[in-house]
Image (cartoon, rainbow, N blue to C red):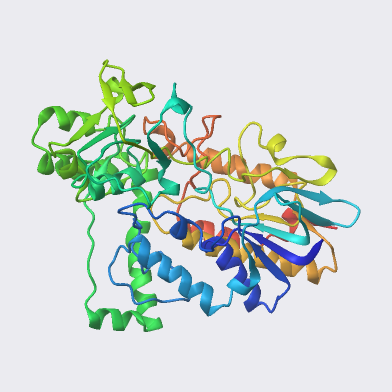
Length: 485
């Protein structure tokens, strides 16, 4: 059994931020467990054609690690380079154990430590766990009728097979969300046919990208200038919450009307326009930024199947649609998302007294600051329930969580205690406040059903307010909300 003070599960930005903060506190006794054979998380795993970030790169980065980005919205390759830059700078590779898939974690009451069980039979022991596996790490493929009968090539966007040559082939992509919206324009020109199965259309806004000139990239290396640019982008994006929460009229004027104009500008066919126009308020589902998606839909070799012409059955050779069309296909791409709400943690977690997180979350996932749960001592969840941000950088929220997590670990030492956990009363008060505020948001009342919601119907993925307000909550540690043992 390997023993450590702290085990971090996941090596994406959440795990990296946790490791860096521990090192800055002088805490060396930690290890990162990564289930894959390589480090880096989302931007190392998602290598599908067209993959790119939809938040401006100077903000979608660690606050104290500036980088000379080549463009405003970095593509996957550059984000992966940035990830490698951070990993190398802090020597995180030597602290990471790859091919370590966690199968179960259990709290040991008698010794006040966690046992982390791996698929390979190994067990790690730790006082603290930081779960940074991420909400977009467990791909989901719906159980379509006949799915297992298909004899052609198929894969999820999260696990793109680069050995397969899709050029000149007949391809279907199931799903039309953020990943699909990047893949469709990237491959449409190269395939013989591309059939897109869209359950619900997304609102799409233009992507105002910009290639940085050499002198601009040189300026990005300056920490002060980088910080100024970050804050300018941050406050510009932060204003969006006014529309998402406080003014539907303002949201429609500032975003939905431009999105409608974007459709009219890029699509001339009225039938296609109708197919891609949502019937819900913009922001209720994730907004897509793209200048190339609608032109791809207009190509002669691209066929958009909306909810009236969905999948009736997957056959050995392709897809039979609900309108009776038989599509012979070489490749089916599943762009069907992730278990991002009910499956925030993908492995069983057993806390104090044998209580499991699945029991606590039977109604819906919940956590104080989206980070800690009563009866689960010394367990911290990065990007847990209601920490998602629809208008700014997820890394900002991760860094806010680190303020809380590092204070909590530090206070255990200061109190000469073995563990810390949030009180049930504090967690209930926080959760009730979150869902009360959520009722005011477009995610709750915008008229759509999105992956932001859990099976309970509650919005679990999003934080219903300004990101700076979450930062303040996480920074101002409340001793009375916690129990030390």
